[in-house]
Length: 490
Image 1 (cartoon, rainbow, N blue to C red):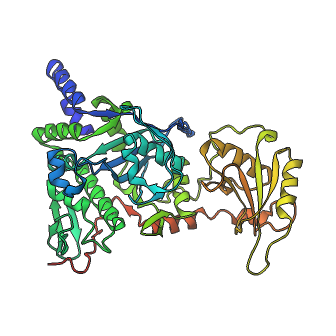
Image 2 (image 1 turned 90 degrees about the horizontal axis):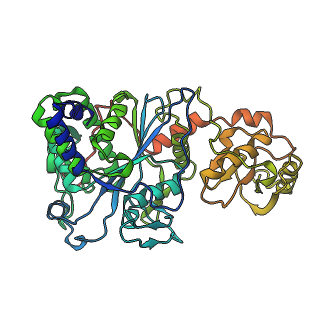
Image 3 (image 1 turned 90 degrees about the vertical axis):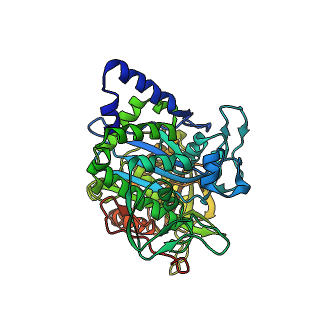
């Protein structure tokens, strides 16, 4: 888009302005955040720069003739749309790297209260877990943004949403993008289900409707699940970026114009991204990142009755790395330490802290009375509202949990007062307030052991495990190739 607009907008004054107005009018706009919680501000790095987070949403809306033809599933025509593709794109503050985290569409999570800006209908917060793709039908993409913020605590600056016909028009305008399969594949089963994608073994340049088929293929890739489809989407996006970086697709003025018009007609954006000039400025920021510093990953997950849940520990670690602007590719991770929260902490005496005993191990059992002992240590440090919680929560390492980003500063203050590393403060939706779990690494004494503090910095190893679970893909990986599912070859 940056290359497109630099040629088209900066033309002759009269024609350029009229064309600019036309492109602006093409864009569809929605509110950024339909939840009732304002998102926290960004933390500024040493150079005064801030990161940028964009939620990319693929809607399965079948509300037009084109989308009905492309989407199929007649029984879902004109139904509330689902956010079947959700990718959070994080651009580092120094614009040196991009990290993308995809959330599987059937992830179960709690949804916040959302208000539809057009009808004023209020969707109350869910009492139990729901599939994340349902968020789009609760007022629009701003509810999908609010749902992400509820789960991750990541401040989201913008969203961009596209539907089936939008993908086809943009894929046509961009031109062919190379994709690879290990065998001949035809995504169609005996019941007629599947995207219809039919490719020969090896590399094929796909565009238009065939590109949409690639992005939608589930039956025919790997194990036939949405998780395989997400990996294929990462391959396509990385390949598309590489092609556009070559500029071979953007050398013809007519192609440039077609891409600009297709993009603006295809996209629904938030109100902060409501002009082509703002899209141009965003494109300039994205352009700064080399493909070798792009990392795409699927949120680590665990199965839950045919659906999935965020994998404890690993999913939150990736979310935390995004919140702290830590590169997922590991470059600089050895030198970069957890940052102090930008959220100001309350006075020590006003911070409520529940202390649980998590010292139990198979070999040693529980160290009785540890919750009360450590609560007493906190009280002596000035935390007058520290209380022992009788529940036992076994943990290998001592951890301070907090439920939302507005309590992160309080949690870090508690950690610091006990000599715990900042990395011990972790966000969790399983607690309702700041909760200190005294782990098996601190079974005795009033001071956290120095040896435990030194051993606590395991972020590098934990990051590697999380990226392995999420099947991380680098932007310059030209060898990536989708494995074909048995029974879908020809």
